[in-house]
Image (cartoon, rainbow, N blue to C red; front, side, top):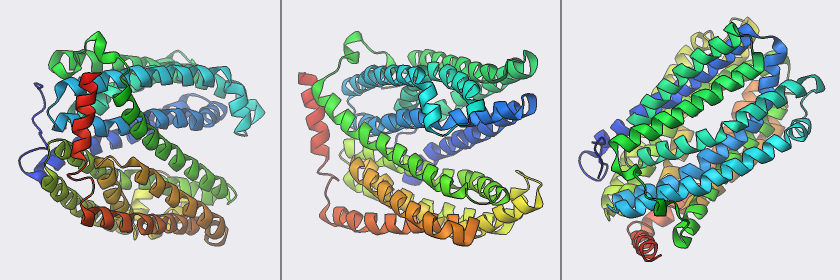
Length: 462
């Protein structure tokens, strides 16, 4: 079916298969976090504070658009994995082509809308007047690159859906290196400031798209699409949109919730705000392995469901849950033991370090909870029930925000951790009974396989 991938999740050792998938994914996500930190450092080093603040003001809007695109692709990934598991190359090609068509149209429309209403958007998000011009410039240039991001994200999603997480990692590393090099050239060398930062990013995104397209066309016949593969077929379109919208809304709800919590944090002292910011940077790195294991489990379940291997899918889920808990335990020990030393990598300010360590002193005890919630959500993603994933995330955010209003002012940065804990508790309380019900009734696995076959047959007829 394709020439490069050797990690077939439908057969062989389950743990080995998931580790081969997960490790490149973890490296890729951590590399992105490191790149983001370096990118910000370059802007801060070679421009003024106003430029840094302008980029920061535009970033939330860019993030919302990016999370929408990523969410749409994550939803479609389940279908791709199913079709790959069912060994139906033709329907898989049609799904990839459909995503290229509808997601690209969506990206262009959203980009144009954001460009035309960029100033009102910035004003509406309470950006200071003296930052509007710079933030608008950065936002408009960044929106031009969204179409590049969309296309290579679809390609990366398709590769990961068939078990290949290594190729996206290699291309991503090349892209980040190009971006950093262009940052130094445009910002430090040509003194282009904010415009240079945005231009470096979209050029790197365009190059990434070209590299991804050329590579998969050469190495993988799944991506050699015919014009007819880009057609919008009703049956496939409806199911893709159903999955994609649920996944996209989950991403947006999560981001909005974090933004509301941040608004409460912004009422604390500058030192406490900084401590929380540095603490959450550590969280970003600590929680990535859990997210990646969850993604591996979801793909594993979807592939094996498509292959009519319900027992293997369930077994993979249980192994994945053990992996989640093991990783969470290791990271908890590391963070609790070395949190002060870790925070020193981000700041030398004693007071900032103290508040960051206070925050991590609570978070380190509860990393097992996101391991559990990610594990449960990976099951529902894998079986294609993304509505439950969306609802459980919404429950988590609602209670996290409520708790933030209660705890943040009383316990400062520790209150932020308490609010996160509260959200995770209610998320588990919501998810766990549903998981037990589905598991006992054996709903979706293997019964859902019939739906996979139905979509395949109806797509072929169309």
